[in-house]
Length: 502
Ligand code: SAH
Image (cartoon, rainbow, N blue to C red; front, side, top):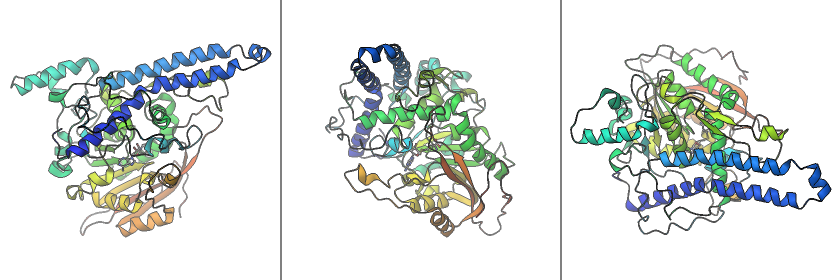
Protein backbone atom coordinates (compact mmCIF):
# COMPACT_ATOMS: atom_id res chain seq x y z
CA UNK A 1 0.00 0.00 0.00
CA UNK A 2 1.45 3.32 -1.03
CA UNK A 3 0.01 5.48 1.71
CA UNK A 4 1.96 7.22 4.40
CA UNK A 5 0.80 4.43 6.68
CA UNK A 6 3.46 2.81 8.80
CA UNK A 7 4.13 -0.91 8.42
CA UNK A 8 2.68 -1.59 11.83
CA UNK A 9 -0.50 0.33 10.98
CA UNK A 10 -0.78 -1.59 7.77
CA UNK A 11 -0.34 -4.89 9.55
CA UNK A 12 -3.00 -3.92 12.08
CA UNK A 13 -5.31 -2.91 9.29
CA UNK A 14 -4.82 -6.16 7.42
CA UNK A 15 -5.53 -7.95 10.65
CA UNK A 16 -8.74 -6.00 11.24
CA UNK A 17 -9.84 -6.62 7.68
CA UNK A 18 -9.09 -10.33 7.97
CA UNK A 19 -11.21 -10.46 11.06
CA UNK A 20 -14.13 -8.88 9.22
CA UNK A 21 -13.74 -11.21 6.26
CA UNK A 22 -13.55 -14.16 8.65
CA UNK A 23 -16.78 -13.03 10.27
CA UNK A 24 -18.51 -12.88 6.90
CA UNK A 25 -17.09 -16.31 6.01
CA UNK A 26 -18.36 -17.77 9.27
CA UNK A 27 -21.90 -16.55 8.71
CA UNK A 28 -23.11 -19.85 7.26
CA UNK A 29 -21.56 -22.08 9.91
CA UNK A 30 -22.89 -19.90 12.72
CA UNK A 31 -26.39 -19.96 11.26
CA UNK A 32 -26.18 -23.74 10.87
CA UNK A 33 -25.20 -24.04 14.53
CA UNK A 34 -28.33 -22.13 15.50
CA UNK A 35 -30.55 -24.34 13.37
CA UNK A 36 -28.93 -27.47 14.80
CA UNK A 37 -29.58 -26.19 18.30
CA UNK A 38 -33.23 -25.58 17.46
CA UNK A 39 -33.41 -29.07 16.02
CA UNK A 40 -31.88 -30.56 19.14
CA UNK A 41 -34.50 -28.84 21.26
CA UNK A 42 -37.16 -30.22 18.98
CA UNK A 43 -35.87 -33.77 19.39
CA UNK A 44 -36.22 -33.39 23.15
CA UNK A 45 -39.96 -32.95 22.82
CA UNK A 46 -42.28 -35.79 23.77
CA UNK A 47 -43.78 -37.58 20.79
CA UNK A 48 -47.17 -36.01 21.33
CA UNK A 49 -45.63 -32.53 21.39
CA UNK A 50 -43.59 -33.43 18.32
CA UNK A 51 -46.72 -34.51 16.54
CA UNK A 52 -48.32 -31.21 17.36
CA UNK A 53 -45.38 -29.35 15.85
CA UNK A 54 -44.63 -31.67 12.98
CA UNK A 55 -44.22 -28.74 10.60
CA UNK A 56 -41.12 -27.52 12.47
CA UNK A 57 -38.58 -29.89 10.83
CA UNK A 58 -39.73 -28.52 7.50
CA UNK A 59 -39.31 -25.00 8.80
CA UNK A 60 -35.75 -25.84 9.85
CA UNK A 61 -35.00 -27.07 6.34
CA UNK A 62 -36.52 -23.93 4.94
CA UNK A 63 -34.32 -21.87 7.26
CA UNK A 64 -31.31 -23.73 5.87
CA UNK A 65 -32.34 -22.81 2.35
CA UNK A 66 -32.63 -19.17 3.41
CA UNK A 67 -29.16 -19.28 4.97
CA UNK A 68 -27.80 -20.60 1.67
CA UNK A 69 -29.36 -17.68 -0.17
CA UNK A 70 -27.88 -15.21 2.30
CA UNK A 71 -24.50 -16.92 2.04
CA UNK A 72 -24.64 -16.66 -1.73
CA UNK A 73 -24.93 -12.90 -1.45
CA UNK A 74 -22.14 -12.69 1.11
CA UNK A 75 -19.76 -14.77 -0.99
CA UNK A 76 -20.50 -12.69 -4.06
CA UNK A 77 -19.84 -9.55 -2.08
CA UNK A 78 -16.56 -10.90 -0.71
CA UNK A 79 -15.41 -12.07 -4.10
CA UNK A 80 -16.06 -8.67 -5.61
CA UNK A 81 -14.13 -6.92 -2.87
CA UNK A 82 -10.82 -5.53 -3.92
CA UNK A 83 -8.85 -5.20 -0.73
CA UNK A 84 -6.73 -2.13 -0.27
CA UNK A 85 -3.85 -4.36 0.81
CA UNK A 86 -2.22 -7.53 -0.30
CA UNK A 87 -4.24 -9.85 1.89
CA UNK A 88 -2.04 -12.77 1.01
CA UNK A 89 0.77 -11.05 2.83
CA UNK A 90 1.46 -12.88 6.03
CA UNK A 91 0.44 -9.83 8.02
CA UNK A 92 3.98 -8.61 8.41
CA UNK A 93 4.85 -11.27 10.91
CA UNK A 94 2.13 -10.44 13.40
CA UNK A 95 0.09 -13.30 14.67
CA UNK A 96 -3.17 -13.18 12.81
CA UNK A 97 -4.82 -15.84 14.89
CA UNK A 98 -5.20 -13.97 18.13
CA UNK A 99 -8.78 -12.86 17.82
CA UNK A 100 -9.93 -11.15 20.94
CA UNK A 101 -11.92 -13.87 22.64
CA UNK A 102 -15.56 -12.97 22.84
CA UNK A 103 -14.56 -9.50 23.77
CA UNK A 104 -17.95 -8.01 23.20
CA UNK A 105 -20.02 -11.09 23.62
CA UNK A 106 -22.01 -9.21 26.23
CA UNK A 107 -23.32 -6.80 23.71
CA UNK A 108 -27.03 -7.14 23.80
CA UNK A 109 -28.00 -8.76 20.56
CA UNK A 110 -31.36 -9.69 19.11
CA UNK A 111 -33.55 -7.62 21.36
CA UNK A 112 -31.39 -4.60 21.74
CA UNK A 113 -30.00 -1.80 19.76
CA UNK A 114 -28.37 -3.38 16.78
CA UNK A 115 -26.41 -0.29 15.94
CA UNK A 116 -24.14 -0.89 18.84
CA UNK A 117 -23.28 -4.40 17.86
CA UNK A 118 -21.64 -3.26 14.67
CA UNK A 119 -19.82 -0.36 16.12
CA UNK A 120 -18.84 -1.46 19.52
CA UNK A 121 -15.35 -2.65 19.07
CA UNK A 122 -12.36 -1.38 17.26
CA UNK A 123 -11.92 -4.55 15.25
CA UNK A 124 -13.23 -4.13 11.80
CA UNK A 125 -12.90 -0.41 11.74
CA UNK A 126 -10.62 1.30 9.34
CA UNK A 127 -8.02 2.92 11.51
CA UNK A 128 -6.57 5.15 8.83
CA UNK A 129 -8.30 7.21 6.27
CA UNK A 130 -8.86 5.61 2.91
CA UNK A 131 -10.95 6.76 0.08
CA UNK A 132 -13.01 4.61 -2.14
CA UNK A 133 -15.23 5.67 -4.94
CA UNK A 134 -18.37 3.72 -4.64
CA UNK A 135 -20.00 5.12 -7.67
CA UNK A 136 -18.42 5.88 -10.91
CA UNK A 137 -18.66 9.58 -11.38
CA UNK A 138 -19.79 10.37 -14.84
CA UNK A 139 -22.33 12.70 -16.27
CA UNK A 140 -24.45 9.75 -17.31
CA UNK A 141 -24.26 8.18 -13.87
CA UNK A 142 -22.94 4.91 -15.24
CA UNK A 143 -21.11 2.70 -12.84
CA UNK A 144 -19.16 -0.46 -13.25
CA UNK A 145 -21.04 -3.69 -13.42
CA UNK A 146 -19.58 -7.08 -12.58
CA UNK A 147 -19.39 -8.03 -16.23
CA UNK A 148 -17.46 -4.94 -17.02
CA UNK A 149 -15.01 -5.57 -14.25
CA UNK A 150 -12.43 -7.47 -16.23
CA UNK A 151 -12.90 -5.25 -19.24
CA UNK A 152 -12.25 -2.30 -16.99
CA UNK A 153 -9.14 -3.93 -15.63
CA UNK A 154 -7.85 -4.67 -19.08
CA UNK A 155 -8.59 -1.16 -20.14
CA UNK A 156 -6.85 0.24 -17.12
CA UNK A 157 -3.77 -1.69 -18.04
CA UNK A 158 -4.10 -0.54 -21.61
CA UNK A 159 -4.24 3.02 -20.37
CA UNK A 160 -1.10 2.49 -18.39
CA UNK A 161 0.52 1.47 -21.64
CA UNK A 162 -0.69 4.64 -23.26
CA UNK A 163 -3.32 3.06 -25.47
CA UNK A 164 -6.49 4.88 -26.42
CA UNK A 165 -9.57 4.34 -24.34
CA UNK A 166 -13.01 3.66 -25.73
CA UNK A 167 -15.66 6.07 -24.52
CA UNK A 168 -17.73 3.55 -22.61
CA UNK A 169 -14.83 2.09 -20.76
CA UNK A 170 -13.41 5.49 -20.12
CA UNK A 171 -16.64 6.40 -18.41
CA UNK A 172 -16.13 3.43 -16.18
CA UNK A 173 -12.63 4.23 -15.20
CA UNK A 174 -11.97 5.36 -11.68
CA UNK A 175 -11.04 8.99 -11.36
CA UNK A 176 -9.76 10.97 -8.48
CA UNK A 177 -12.64 13.30 -9.08
CA UNK A 178 -13.71 13.65 -5.49
CA UNK A 179 -10.66 15.29 -4.30
CA UNK A 180 -10.56 17.61 -7.27
CA UNK A 181 -14.22 18.43 -7.40
CA UNK A 182 -14.74 19.25 -3.77
CA UNK A 183 -11.51 21.08 -3.65
CA UNK A 184 -9.95 18.66 -1.27
CA UNK A 185 -6.84 18.38 -3.34
CA UNK A 186 -4.09 17.38 -1.07
CA UNK A 187 -6.55 18.06 1.67
CA UNK A 188 -7.18 14.54 2.77
CA UNK A 189 -3.56 13.95 3.45
CA UNK A 190 -1.21 11.32 2.24
CA UNK A 191 -3.20 8.49 3.71
CA UNK A 192 -6.11 8.86 1.32
CA UNK A 193 -6.11 6.20 -1.33
CA UNK A 194 -8.58 4.67 -3.65
CA UNK A 195 -9.65 1.46 -2.16
CA UNK A 196 -12.23 -0.27 -4.26
CA UNK A 197 -10.46 0.28 -7.51
CA UNK A 198 -6.80 -0.41 -7.10
CA UNK A 199 -6.53 -1.59 -10.63
CA UNK A 200 -2.82 -2.15 -10.89
CA UNK A 201 -2.69 -4.17 -7.73
CA UNK A 202 -5.98 -5.98 -8.06
CA UNK A 203 -5.80 -9.51 -6.91
CA UNK A 204 -9.24 -10.08 -5.44
CA UNK A 205 -9.76 -12.09 -2.31
CA UNK A 206 -8.52 -15.61 -1.93
CA UNK A 207 -11.29 -16.77 0.37
CA UNK A 208 -9.54 -20.07 1.02
CA UNK A 209 -6.50 -18.34 2.41
CA UNK A 210 -5.55 -19.94 5.74
CA UNK A 211 -5.37 -16.56 7.44
CA UNK A 212 -9.15 -16.42 7.60
CA UNK A 213 -10.54 -17.80 10.82
CA UNK A 214 -12.55 -20.96 10.94
CA UNK A 215 -14.19 -19.84 14.14
CA UNK A 216 -14.84 -16.27 15.11
CA UNK A 217 -16.37 -14.68 18.19
CA UNK A 218 -20.14 -14.83 18.03
CA UNK A 219 -20.24 -11.06 18.38
CA UNK A 220 -18.46 -10.78 15.03
CA UNK A 221 -21.07 -12.91 13.31
CA UNK A 222 -23.70 -10.77 15.00
CA UNK A 223 -22.22 -7.83 13.18
CA UNK A 224 -22.73 -9.60 9.86
CA UNK A 225 -26.37 -10.12 10.80
CA UNK A 226 -26.59 -6.43 11.65
CA UNK A 227 -25.25 -5.59 8.21
CA UNK A 228 -28.03 -7.66 6.70
CA UNK A 229 -30.56 -5.61 8.64
CA UNK A 230 -28.82 -2.45 7.50
CA UNK A 231 -29.21 -3.62 3.92
CA UNK A 232 -32.95 -3.72 4.50
CA UNK A 233 -32.86 -0.22 6.01
CA UNK A 234 -30.86 1.35 3.21
CA UNK A 235 -31.61 -0.66 0.11
CA UNK A 236 -34.53 -3.02 0.74
CA UNK A 237 -38.05 -2.36 -0.43
CA UNK A 238 -39.12 -3.08 3.11
CA UNK A 239 -36.81 -0.36 4.42
CA UNK A 240 -38.90 2.25 2.66
CA UNK A 241 -40.82 3.08 5.84
CA UNK A 242 -37.67 3.68 7.84
CA UNK A 243 -36.13 5.69 5.04
CA UNK A 244 -39.27 7.78 4.84
CA UNK A 245 -38.97 8.46 8.57
CA UNK A 246 -35.25 9.27 8.62
CA UNK A 247 -33.98 10.20 5.20
CA UNK A 248 -37.00 11.93 3.66
CA UNK A 249 -37.11 14.81 6.18
CA UNK A 250 -33.36 15.28 5.85
CA UNK A 251 -33.53 15.39 2.06
CA UNK A 252 -36.47 17.76 2.14
CA UNK A 253 -34.64 20.09 4.50
CA UNK A 254 -31.49 19.97 2.41
CA UNK A 255 -33.46 21.05 -0.64
CA UNK A 256 -35.03 23.89 1.33
CA UNK A 257 -31.60 25.06 2.43
CA UNK A 258 -30.14 24.83 -1.08
CA UNK A 259 -33.02 25.67 -3.39
CA UNK A 260 -30.79 26.73 -6.29
CA UNK A 261 -28.18 24.09 -6.96
CA UNK A 262 -25.92 24.96 -9.82
CA UNK A 263 -24.90 22.13 -12.11
CA UNK A 264 -21.66 23.88 -12.97
CA UNK A 265 -20.68 24.32 -9.38
CA UNK A 266 -22.80 22.02 -7.21
CA UNK A 267 -22.83 22.46 -3.45
CA UNK A 268 -20.80 19.93 -1.49
CA UNK A 269 -22.17 17.72 1.25
CA UNK A 270 -20.41 15.49 3.74
CA UNK A 271 -22.21 12.53 5.32
CA UNK A 272 -20.23 11.19 8.28
CA UNK A 273 -21.17 7.72 9.53
CA UNK A 274 -22.64 6.96 6.12
CA UNK A 275 -23.39 3.30 6.86
CA UNK A 276 -24.42 1.55 3.67
CA UNK A 277 -24.51 4.76 1.70
CA UNK A 278 -28.17 5.23 0.77
CA UNK A 279 -28.53 8.67 2.33
CA UNK A 280 -25.31 9.84 0.68
CA UNK A 281 -26.54 8.38 -2.61
CA UNK A 282 -29.87 10.24 -2.32
CA UNK A 283 -28.09 13.49 -1.51
CA UNK A 284 -25.91 13.00 -4.56
CA UNK A 285 -29.01 12.47 -6.69
CA UNK A 286 -30.26 15.86 -5.53
CA UNK A 287 -27.27 17.51 -7.15
CA UNK A 288 -24.71 17.72 -4.36
CA UNK A 289 -21.11 16.65 -4.64
CA UNK A 290 -21.39 14.14 -1.86
CA UNK A 291 -18.87 12.32 0.24
CA UNK A 292 -19.89 9.59 2.65
CA UNK A 293 -17.49 8.83 5.46
CA UNK A 294 -17.43 5.48 7.18
CA UNK A 295 -14.91 3.53 9.20
CA UNK A 296 -16.39 0.08 9.54
CA UNK A 297 -15.08 -2.50 7.08
CA UNK A 298 -18.31 -4.42 7.56
CA UNK A 299 -20.19 -1.43 6.18
CA UNK A 300 -17.62 -0.40 3.59
CA UNK A 301 -17.38 -3.79 1.92
CA UNK A 302 -21.11 -4.02 1.63
CA UNK A 303 -21.77 -0.46 0.48
CA UNK A 304 -19.02 -0.76 -2.09
CA UNK A 305 -20.66 -3.89 -3.47
CA UNK A 306 -24.15 -2.42 -3.64
CA UNK A 307 -23.04 0.90 -5.07
CA UNK A 308 -20.51 -0.43 -7.56
CA UNK A 309 -21.49 -3.95 -8.43
CA UNK A 310 -25.23 -4.27 -8.47
CA UNK A 311 -26.57 -4.36 -11.98
CA UNK A 312 -30.31 -4.06 -11.72
CA UNK A 313 -33.02 -3.15 -9.24
CA UNK A 314 -34.04 -5.97 -6.90
CA UNK A 315 -31.24 -8.14 -8.18
CA UNK A 316 -30.47 -9.70 -4.81
CA UNK A 317 -32.51 -11.53 -2.23
CA UNK A 318 -31.87 -11.89 1.47
CA UNK A 319 -33.77 -13.45 4.33
CA UNK A 320 -32.90 -10.96 7.06
CA UNK A 321 -35.19 -12.21 9.80
CA UNK A 322 -34.31 -15.88 9.97
CA UNK A 323 -31.83 -15.57 12.79
CA UNK A 324 -34.32 -15.15 15.56
CA UNK A 325 -37.40 -17.19 16.38
CA UNK A 326 -38.55 -14.55 18.82
CA UNK A 327 -41.47 -12.20 18.36
CA UNK A 328 -42.66 -13.63 15.04
CA UNK A 329 -46.39 -13.51 14.41
CA UNK A 330 -46.14 -16.22 11.78
CA UNK A 331 -43.48 -18.52 10.36
CA UNK A 332 -44.07 -16.88 7.03
CA UNK A 333 -43.12 -13.50 8.53
CA UNK A 334 -39.86 -14.90 9.78
CA UNK A 335 -39.10 -16.57 6.46
CA UNK A 336 -39.98 -13.65 4.24
CA UNK A 337 -37.52 -12.47 1.64
CA UNK A 338 -36.31 -8.94 1.12
CA UNK A 339 -35.13 -7.91 -2.29
CA UNK A 340 -32.68 -5.17 -3.00
CA UNK A 341 -31.50 -2.74 -4.14
CA UNK A 342 -34.84 -1.05 -4.65
CA UNK A 343 -32.88 1.62 -6.50
CA UNK A 344 -30.10 0.72 -8.90
CA UNK A 345 -27.30 3.11 -7.98
CA UNK A 346 -25.78 2.83 -11.45
CA UNK A 347 -28.76 4.44 -13.08
CA UNK A 348 -29.91 6.63 -10.23
CA UNK A 349 -28.62 9.96 -11.51
CA UNK A 350 -25.64 10.30 -9.22
CA UNK A 351 -23.89 13.68 -9.28
CA UNK A 352 -20.29 13.58 -10.41
CA UNK A 353 -17.87 13.43 -7.52
CA UNK A 354 -19.78 11.03 -5.30
CA UNK A 355 -17.31 9.22 -3.08
CA UNK A 356 -16.92 7.25 0.09
CA UNK A 357 -14.10 8.14 2.38
CA UNK A 358 -12.99 5.27 4.55
CA UNK A 359 -11.56 6.41 7.84
CA UNK A 360 -12.24 7.80 11.25
CA UNK A 361 -14.33 10.95 11.02
CA UNK A 362 -12.26 12.98 13.47
CA UNK A 363 -8.98 11.84 12.04
CA UNK A 364 -9.93 12.66 8.46
CA UNK A 365 -11.92 15.85 8.82
CA UNK A 366 -9.88 17.57 11.51
CA UNK A 367 -7.14 17.84 8.91
CA UNK A 368 -6.45 21.55 8.26
CA UNK A 369 -7.24 21.07 4.58
CA UNK A 370 -10.82 20.23 5.57
CA UNK A 371 -11.39 23.57 7.26
CA UNK A 372 -14.38 25.36 5.72
CA UNK A 373 -14.49 22.78 2.93
CA UNK A 374 -18.19 21.81 2.99
CA UNK A 375 -21.44 23.58 2.18
CA UNK A 376 -23.41 21.02 4.16
CA UNK A 377 -22.87 18.26 6.68
CA UNK A 378 -25.64 15.70 7.08
CA UNK A 379 -25.54 13.23 9.95
CA UNK A 380 -28.09 10.54 10.66
CA UNK A 381 -27.81 8.30 13.73
CA UNK A 382 -24.17 9.32 13.95
CA UNK A 383 -23.27 11.85 16.63
CA UNK A 384 -23.84 9.47 19.53
CA UNK A 385 -21.11 7.17 18.15
CA UNK A 386 -18.48 9.54 19.54
CA UNK A 387 -16.15 8.91 22.42
CA UNK A 388 -16.14 12.66 22.73
CA UNK A 389 -19.13 14.33 21.15
CA UNK A 390 -17.58 17.75 21.78
CA UNK A 391 -14.83 16.78 19.36
CA UNK A 392 -17.40 15.71 16.74
CA UNK A 393 -19.19 19.04 17.06
CA UNK A 394 -15.94 20.96 16.80
CA UNK A 395 -14.90 19.04 13.68
CA UNK A 396 -18.30 19.51 12.04
CA UNK A 397 -18.26 23.23 12.79
CA UNK A 398 -14.75 23.67 11.45
CA UNK A 399 -15.38 21.62 8.31
CA UNK A 400 -18.39 23.77 7.35
CA UNK A 401 -18.02 26.87 5.27
CA UNK A 402 -19.33 30.04 6.94
CA UNK A 403 -23.07 29.98 6.29
CA UNK A 404 -22.87 26.21 5.76
CA UNK A 405 -25.65 24.00 7.03
CA UNK A 406 -25.59 21.05 9.43
CA UNK A 407 -28.64 18.81 9.33
CA UNK A 408 -28.73 16.13 11.99
CA UNK A 409 -31.18 13.42 12.90
CA UNK A 410 -30.71 10.87 15.62
CA UNK A 411 -30.96 9.92 19.27
CA UNK A 412 -28.32 10.29 21.95
CA UNK A 413 -27.80 6.62 22.68
CA UNK A 414 -24.16 7.05 23.45
CA UNK A 415 -22.34 4.26 21.89
CA UNK A 416 -19.62 3.87 24.48
CA UNK A 417 -21.87 4.56 27.47
CA UNK A 418 -21.88 0.93 28.57
CA UNK A 419 -18.59 -0.10 27.01
CA UNK A 420 -17.32 -0.89 30.50
CA UNK A 421 -19.65 -3.89 30.56
CA UNK A 422 -17.97 -5.60 27.62
CA UNK A 423 -14.64 -3.91 27.04
CA UNK A 424 -11.51 -4.79 28.94
CA UNK A 425 -10.20 -1.27 28.64
CA UNK A 426 -12.10 1.69 29.96
CA UNK A 427 -13.43 3.62 26.99
CA UNK A 428 -13.84 7.34 27.19
CA UNK A 429 -17.45 8.34 26.81
CA UNK A 430 -18.77 11.88 27.08
CA UNK A 431 -22.53 11.63 27.36
CA UNK A 432 -24.27 14.96 27.02
CA UNK A 433 -27.95 15.81 27.21
CA UNK A 434 -29.54 17.39 24.17
CA UNK A 435 -29.42 20.80 25.83
CA UNK A 436 -25.69 20.43 26.42
CA UNK A 437 -25.11 19.28 22.84
CA UNK A 438 -26.86 22.43 21.63
CA UNK A 439 -24.86 24.58 24.03
CA UNK A 440 -21.58 23.11 22.73
CA UNK A 441 -22.70 23.50 19.11
CA UNK A 442 -23.54 27.13 19.74
CA UNK A 443 -20.11 27.63 21.31
CA UNK A 444 -18.60 26.52 17.99
CA UNK A 445 -20.70 28.99 16.06
CA UNK A 446 -23.48 26.63 15.00
CA UNK A 447 -26.74 28.54 15.18
CA UNK A 448 -29.87 26.49 15.71
CA UNK A 449 -32.43 27.35 13.04
CA UNK A 450 -34.98 24.58 13.35
CA UNK A 451 -35.62 21.75 15.69
CA UNK A 452 -38.14 18.96 15.99
CA UNK A 453 -38.46 15.38 17.13
CA UNK A 454 -38.99 12.49 14.76
CA UNK A 455 -40.31 9.14 15.82
CA UNK A 456 -38.51 6.36 14.04
CA UNK A 457 -37.07 2.88 14.22
CA UNK A 458 -33.57 1.77 13.27
CA UNK A 459 -33.14 -1.48 11.32
CA UNK A 460 -36.39 -2.74 12.79
CA UNK A 461 -38.19 -5.83 11.62
CA UNK A 462 -41.50 -4.21 10.75
CA UNK A 463 -43.38 -7.45 11.37
CA UNK A 464 -41.85 -8.19 14.73
CA UNK A 465 -43.83 -8.09 17.95
CA UNK A 466 -41.04 -5.99 19.38
CA UNK A 467 -39.83 -2.73 17.88
CA UNK A 468 -37.47 -0.20 19.41
CA UNK A 469 -38.69 3.29 18.75
CA UNK A 470 -36.57 6.39 18.97
CA UNK A 471 -37.72 9.93 19.44
CA UNK A 472 -34.87 11.29 17.45
CA UNK A 473 -33.79 14.87 17.53
CA UNK A 474 -33.86 16.57 14.15
CA UNK A 475 -32.24 19.93 13.67
CA UNK A 476 -30.79 22.36 11.23
CA UNK A 477 -27.91 24.52 12.33
CA UNK A 478 -26.08 27.13 10.32
CA UNK A 479 -22.48 28.04 10.84
CA UNK A 480 -22.05 31.68 11.73
CA UNK A 481 -21.58 33.86 8.72
CA UNK A 482 -18.37 35.60 8.01
CA UNK A 483 -18.83 39.33 7.42
CA UNK A 484 -20.80 40.09 4.27
CA UNK A 485 -22.29 36.62 3.77
CA UNK A 486 -26.01 36.09 3.43
CA UNK A 487 -28.00 33.74 5.58
CA UNK A 488 -30.57 32.43 3.11
CA UNK A 489 -32.04 29.74 5.30
CA UNK A 490 -35.81 29.73 5.68
CA UNK A 491 -36.76 30.08 9.31
CA UNK A 492 -40.22 28.56 9.28
CA UNK A 493 -40.44 25.03 10.71
CA UNK A 494 -40.96 22.05 8.44
CA UNK A 495 -44.58 21.14 8.02
CA UNK A 496 -44.46 17.42 7.36
CA UNK A 497 -43.37 16.20 10.70
CA UNK A 498 -44.10 16.89 14.32
CA UNK A 499 -42.52 20.05 15.60
CA UNK A 500 -41.42 20.38 19.18
CA UNK A 501 -40.02 23.85 19.25
CA UNK A 502 -38.13 24.49 22.44
N1 SAH B 1 -26.14 6.96 8.83
C1 SAH B 1 -26.42 5.56 8.70
C2 SAH B 1 -25.59 4.71 9.68
C3 SAH B 1 -25.80 5.08 11.12
S1 SAH B 1 -24.96 3.98 12.26
C4 SAH B 1 -27.87 5.28 8.89
O1 SAH B 1 -28.62 6.18 9.30
O2 SAH B 1 -28.30 4.15 8.62
C5 SAH B 1 -23.51 4.93 12.59
C6 SAH B 1 -22.43 4.69 11.57
O3 SAH B 1 -21.33 5.52 11.89
C7 SAH B 1 -21.91 3.25 11.55
O4 SAH B 1 -21.92 2.77 10.25
C8 SAH B 1 -20.50 3.37 12.10
O5 SAH B 1 -19.61 2.41 11.57
C9 SAH B 1 -20.13 4.78 11.70
N2 SAH B 1 -19.13 5.41 12.56
C10 SAH B 1 -19.09 5.39 13.91
N3 SAH B 1 -18.05 6.10 14.36
C11 SAH B 1 -17.40 6.57 13.26
C12 SAH B 1 -16.23 7.37 13.07
N4 SAH B 1 -15.53 7.82 14.12
N5 SAH B 1 -15.84 7.66 11.83
C13 SAH B 1 -16.57 7.21 10.75
N6 SAH B 1 -17.68 6.45 10.87
C14 SAH B 1 -18.08 6.14 12.11
